[in-house]
Image (cartoon, rainbow, N blue to C red; front, side, top):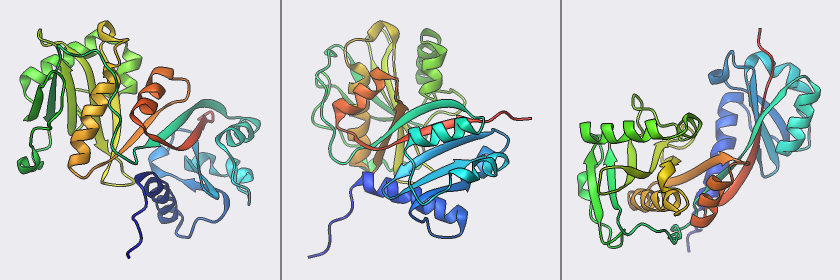
Length: 276
């Protein structure tokens, strides 16, 4: 009997280590290692990703020397890394929970009878052959995958205008850089009640980084969780894996992940140093 494939959460942690090894040019050793990330150039930032047996600190090259003292044979937790970095002059940016879905999502008990699910995409390479209606949906309405046209752009623009800019930023919703896969819960008047999307993670091309945004007037009905649920079902049917990241102090977003059954893979800690 062939061995079972590792769950997506284990694959995610393995991808973190493989990425670090690619940048270092050597295996990740037990303990805490500092890895220069070229994408952080000029930012003064550093983030600790604890994994089983090893913690990886990705950082701007300009702060790597200052952080050399945190490299040790002991794997630091996110909180331990932040405390050590603060002693070196850094400031806390925040903590984040990174979760991966290892099974089919649990359907939330949401109040959404009058809403319709619409799946849209800007990715022309998506094979239409996999676009079959899913049996179950909101009020029996499950949409096929449709291209992102002017109507959807206008609806998204209205959602952005109605939401707090910080919430829009956290969802990474930008009309100029839309994610390739989007699921909308839409009211009869065309208002987007909730939005979920995903874009491929650099670590793993089959891993979607999930975002969610709920219209202020539709909150308190678990619609964010339902939008993510519908998005995840669609993407899992296409062979995708799902990553859900959020700030530790974002209680609503954490509840979405917990409701759907995402597995907590790692809790990260981020800091920034003053830049010249």
